[in-house]
Image: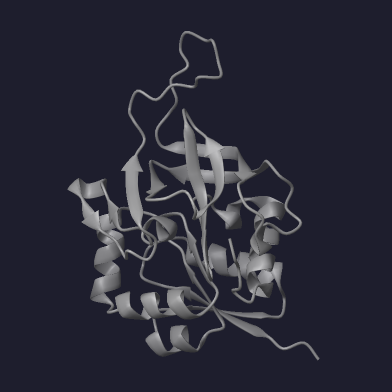
Length: 223
């Protein structure tokens, strides 16, 4: 008999929450996915996912307004936990967005904006300026062997929409990178936490595989 696993998708009003929930359900039909801001449901869930789009000031402001900061930190310390897009950025210490915003400080590092004059060093075109926000499909180079990369080929393409990127204080948490004018960290792994800058729910079969791996993951990882 297969036991269902509960996944809490934290609802703090930031992001395409139901797209994430539907993708999780499609990735594993036995998963019981709850889109919720209820602290008790989040605390009781087997897995917790922090999504998000928008600005960091609004993101952190809504977490504080809903009194979710301690609940999120407790979940990130005690069970398989995943962050997506601004949900990944929120795990860092500080963001330069909105003239500076303190984040959750679960993974030490900064969130920085792409330079306005970013250029593609791999093309010789006179006009090789890159657009901000970075939007579209990019290859992700897996920097480490991790359970969430299971059955996902190296340099697989995932879908991105972002103007800011994370810069961890040390390289140890970097689980994946891409190139956008320069090397960019796009996946983080720290103990029972995995986070991605890209959107698995918009990344076709590879995104669904990542979600399936997350649901199956028991949270153990050693670098």
